[in-house]
Length: 319
Length: 263
Image (cartoon, each protein chain N blue to C red):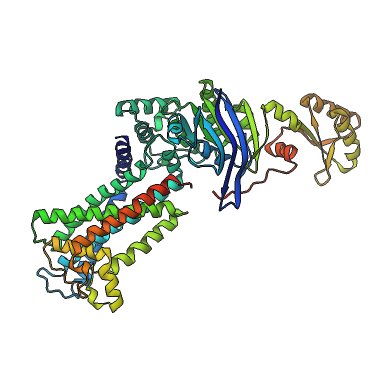
């Protein structure tokens, strides 16, 4: 069964001048994780806002947990959790205050709201800071509290809009751990992100969106295959360029490309480390010294490059 | 009655905020008290009145009305702050009545007004303010003031939801409330104003409120009524009409705005 269905969603801003969504279609199978991957301004947040009943589309259909989002938004709100890009909690209040308040707004009685707040604080390792104002929290702690607030009543469908944007590496890892725990618990999750790595780590399925449209869909393996997996890169002296181009092309089985300014030769490879060793061995026997060498995993830019032929443009859509 | 209990949760949130950051309450009471002292001692000596007890008797109703009129700014900036932080999105994604957040906030701001009015009343008493009308009328005047503040906080809701930037909100609200409170009979006689402004001042809801409060406190409203217009003859009735008009216009407009709010 599909827990989330979006069909041909269209949304324009500024009297039609900015097209945020241009016929976006996606769905999420119950109990799975879908990652919506795209650069800033691709339409990720708009998609989440429509599915979470915060925004009406100009046209198209949306259904969450079997309920029509446009016809019965109030019923949808009972079964979803939303955690946004900006940690939406009351900063002057403590973490505990916030969770109890949201519990009350989910119509738990006072005792149940307090019990749930304590449970969630414990689960997200926030018990020690429970009685401190959110203002004093680190970015990662805020995000965890924000996520906790969206889990007060076990939601059937959870929307996470860029849960790790702006976090430092440690905060990001902590957040991933928390989300992985949730996923194990069987929640249906739609997650937006700008990072291929994140989508890869957390999602069963990935849709790539650009200019308000889905431009690719598949598992992360399938997408990576499409992108060409890893690339081997080697930087050499000017005099060794032509020989190295030959070696890299032969080993990878693909035509190697040259960035003249950086004297960097690169080619997609399927069996990364083996190819790397072979290239180094061949270079060694030719007496070529590599100034820099490495394997590069495909980034969002690479995905975009290969899917759209243009780099991931970072443009701010006026909301 | 989920809508009501949801609103109360939101109101409690505001009270909790005050408990966590008591400075807010302290400064929102210091400011009006400062106004009382400044006007009482700066203008009090030079504005002649035939009132027993002097200028402070006429001043206090004026300052009460001005203070509750500033509720508009408080409501507007509080809401704009919530918008900016993304809190409004969270509230709108919850299974609660759509009106709960804004109703809760207007109620919270009114509760704050009770505290502020009480402190101001005490300050006024210390500097010589003595209402002569009896307890019932005085209580009625304060109730009137609270309702006026409540009505205006709905205007604040609309401004708070309309502004694209929280910083603009403060400016816009003061642009509304300053002329409204000074182009009135609150601090000085309207008779000194140019003729056209006198009419504006007399029809100004702040003037009718001030005049109504003066009546309820047992004073003659000697700072207005030069043109003998309907509002200056019937300040109580006119104030009630104004409050009703404000609510009839701004409650539905604000609720609609909130439903379509997107930051």
